[in-house]
Image (cartoon, rainbow over all chains, first blue to last red; front, side):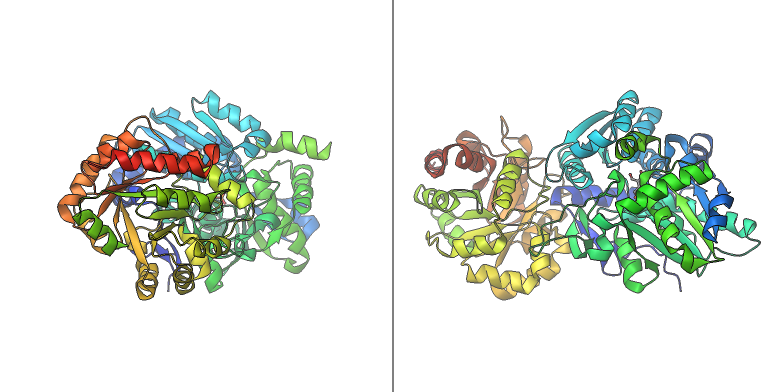
Length: 387
Length: 252
Ligand SMILES: Cc1ncc(COP(=O)(O)O)c(C=O)c1O
């Protein structure tokens, strides 16, 4: 039986997902779903996207085995190098797909939310490449801590608006992007950055990110002489890089799938089902259903919800969602830099932090980690933290 | 609420529904003032952390109320004391209902003396569970129709709407605009052609003149940001004066 399926016609993965949007956006979501279905089964669209992914984004991304860290931790540690993609993270896979689709639908403008700025940079990049205009909403707190990416987006011709409402982080940037979309829906495509939001986004973004897992599965089989890894580990904000890499292993292996959340933004770990941003999923909320603010060192994971398919995978036990603390992340970030010469994004340093902590229980095992992005954007923030 | 609205419409009266953010300083007095000044029902906003259909004014009002510790339950307790003689509706985001539980929330509304609910992020396709609980408890669920809807969708929305039908005035969130969008009257016209449920225009109806313009086609208007701004800037009396001004403008 396959677990990695299309959602139901209502956009549900089990009891999670759906389309809880203002009525104004219902027709837009329906059109997007129809357009995506059409494009995804069109060989010409697929060929054009694949060409962009290889000639522009630099796919396939390679695997790197971390011999130094592997030796000291007593495991075989393999990285999937999404950090080497153009613009520095996995976000480009999804954005190129959505931007091409938006263009095919006759849209001229992209709006996007961003936390760490990686999705914003990728959206600005795709807009520049495809001749579209682009506006990115970013929480005021994140504008502050990811200033390098703010400037990159501006260099790429995008307009960046700091969002001052609510917790002034990713959740509020999503609200503001949705408000923009409600007002501009005829010419604008909302380029959502993760496997979240109303149907068809969680499914569509997974399909665009699934290339990570498909490549990794084939690459692992080759590297491991036909074997699969024992663990597949990724960080989870909205959950797109994790869904991308899990997709290659959910049905085709018995690997344990680990989605690592920040302790201050543990939607699966500390949440109960709720509805925000168009979806029903695990959500951190108070006793009256007010959405709680997440707190994480990493702007990209500072989100109180999670994509609905992760809630589903958690509910059926196919994937696990442990948490790590900011302190564990800071030391994993440094450990990776010093032992392997790789500066990870703070987001995927969460995955590394879990591996370091759990290594004693995984002796001799093969661990595949999705290195979802590079850490250049985080160097300023780390300079302040480490003095 | 629907029976009352239909009867008033029969008599040639246009329907006026001011929106007041629950728990905002002076909100109960504002509701009383609005009722005295000629409102036909009141929409009480339940503050939510993530109000995606609201612009800056109502966002600020919600945030102020949340910062002051207001909860749905505290609003219900205070609503019970209102006794203004016109129907009360709540406007709340779906998570507030989902978190409380559908049946429990419907029961809370009934015991607070509230007759109807408007849930702006609960479109037709997702409304089944809530509507079943609301219907069973006798709570009228007002559906929203938007300018983006294709023709075939409108009768289905109208058929599921109770109380009245909320005709969204423009593409966008709540807030004051300089003029009434052309889409406001256009959609109201399309809706009037497919339903006899009272059609009220809301979102972007920002002053008395715009209310009058909308009422040339629609059965009435909902006034949100323009009321809430007056409550925040001028207090309950300012709300009363404004509602009286709108009432006069829509008395043909
Ligand atoms: C490098 C990197 N990894 C992960 C994430 C989190 O997003 P997701 O959980 O959708 O992969 C971000 C988001 O900004 C990111 O920049």
